[in-house]
Image (cartoon, rainbow, N blue to C red; front, side, top):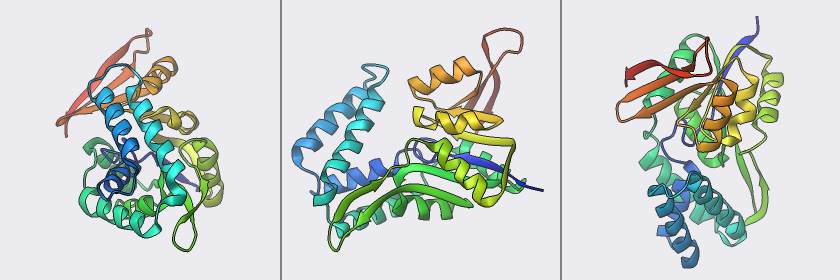
Length: 244
């Protein structure tokens, strides 16, 4: 019998921040990112913090990723590895209770756990091992002797293709499968499974989850709220409120 699968995004879904984001912060503290880009990142973060518009988070996140891509060839591998180690040492326990508990429950039921992240594989792999994932995928930066070459393998989109490759490799089944994600980049992955969950969704993912009838889960403070589509109308109802 083929093993059932459960696929999880990491950044903003299991991890309360973004692994790539925390590395960026560490690199700015080390002076490895030009000051003008630090200032622009701070401005965009403030817009997100103050909720000035619905896509403020996506705008902030996109700029940060672009800056890492632009400066990757001038980023010393040793500086990056030091920043990554600091993130793992200081932040690895900073996870959401709902997704952590769901992951543990599915693991106990014999599910094959998959982590698909847009963060760098050097961060994703130790994080995934720590939380008991069976397979994981992350963005890869090709390394030269002292600096990165600039060749990047992206994994923040096309997660449906990535997941299908894992399914084929490990002979998994989509029957009674789960996937959990928080952003538009997770839509392909969520579309594949029987039990898609939009967790603390961005505006774009929220709209898609509503239109497709996917479960929506929001974790705030020490309570998680599960919204499900009403079988008799287009409304979503509060199906569960659970202390974490």
